Amino acid sequence: MPGTLQDSTLRAMKPTKMKQQRDSLKRNEEKWGAPLMAAGWTAFPSVILERQQGLGLDAVDINIILHLARHWWFSGNLPHPSKRTIAECMGIDPSTVRRHIAAMERDGLITRRRRFSGGDRRQQTNEYSFEGLVKAATPFAGETLKTRRARKAEDEKRRLRRRPDLRLVRQAEGEGEDEP
Image (tube, rainbow, N blue to C red; front, side, top):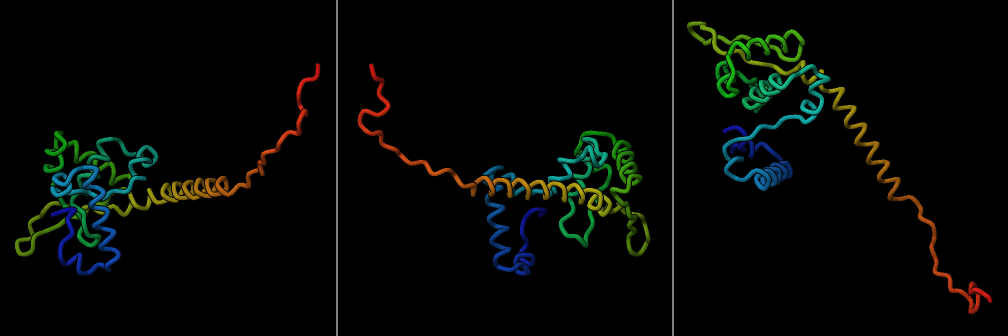
């Protein structure tokens, strides 16, 4: 099931990585509830959502990419849902999905690869690579990280800034009083 840690994956992870993964899942369960998380979840880089205009993506493109990402759990096993499946989930016509995928492919963000079954060589659903999207989004990620580091350095500088020594000074008797 997508989003769940399978036994073989858990065994391959180092103990610290396993603990981080479990802690992350628990935090997400606290936010979204255990039933929603148990039904499956999708990991997706925030920078693609934050910079979708800069990447030339509209809301339908992002939705299609999210549906493709929902089927992509291992780098060596590219997602291959049908356009019809994506369209049904989104409540749109499959031709709209085809047009948007073709445009993203023209822009170099997605690469479609044909798949064929073994013996009879019939075409199966295409698989999709995000190499172009990763390459296009990476400079935006660099900018975001640079901004974050600068903000952190500024916060640290502000925290360590020397504050003036403030001392309570007692007034001598009669000093500072108004004289008639």
